[in-house]
Length: 199
Image (tube, rainbow, N blue to C red):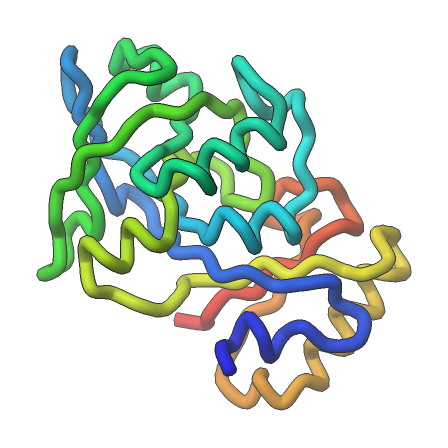
């Protein structure tokens, strides 16, 4: 059983793993290249856990963007500010460095599927979102930097209950830092619980 599965307990609606660290990638367009911060997600489970708003995306709805991620494993979503600097448009081909700075660093061709202003459930300053399958296949790396967990009752009291249940969970025998969405994740307050591995 994966840790994400173990975190699906009473009070929580689901869990999904996220790979994330600052400046862990670089994106190359036909115009230029820029160092970037990449969030790697399982697009299927992430779509069931995160609280999406269409206003966070440009050129399509949240559902359209996540569906595109599911159907095109080598597709990426790009922050509007980075896309503007790289002169990227929807459908453009680009090259993405994965695991930048690690021994497993590698460069893969990707397709730009769309754009976001702030990706829901990801830390601020996320520049690119890519699929977990692509990342694991290309780098050979497995594991997550944090887990996103939804509360069943999407209210302040539901969030409190989910946090309490997670704090009592046996899967927390390892060191974790528990952060609610009001902290670093910038999702709607009361909807999500972010669980980060303690360093």
